[in-house]
Length: 181
Image (cartoon, rainbow, N blue to C red; front, side):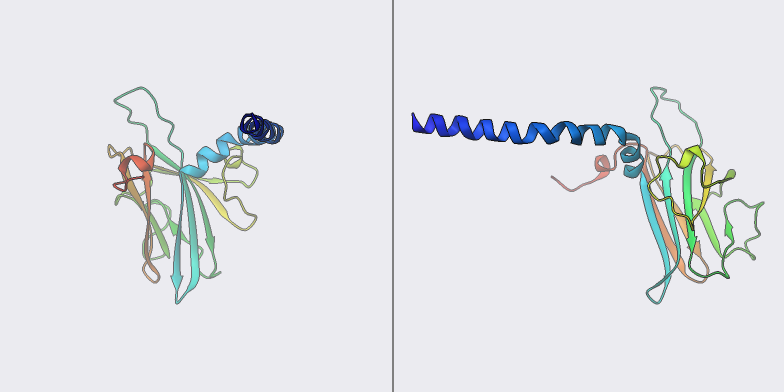
């Protein structure tokens, strides 16, 4: 009888304590669900010189799955670039924007340059759910030609500071993980 009473009191205590905060937690999560979905498809690359970062690029993949098996939509990213060196402010997204001799940094998707680049203002609606919005960053919507691959890499490189790669996937990344849980 004592065990039954103690078991009942323990369950009652756990249910009473968690139910008050559970609703508040669920409300905060549902308010920011788009933010969390965007955060899952966000990667960061840092190019550095002797342990000092020279450029930081953060990219968020804007893919929304559809039921269409022949989906040939272009690959769209929201990209933030922050330069520590005030001398190097040129990034080459497309062949027509900056010549490779002038550019300090180059961004490619599996070896292809962007087909379209839009500079985004700080108050742009597309930045609302993006996690890396800062007052000092420069923001772009970068569109690359469609890739049939389900898993691909975005390369951020500099002749002076090297190369960094960001891995993206059209499905959840754990699908491609070989590690067991």
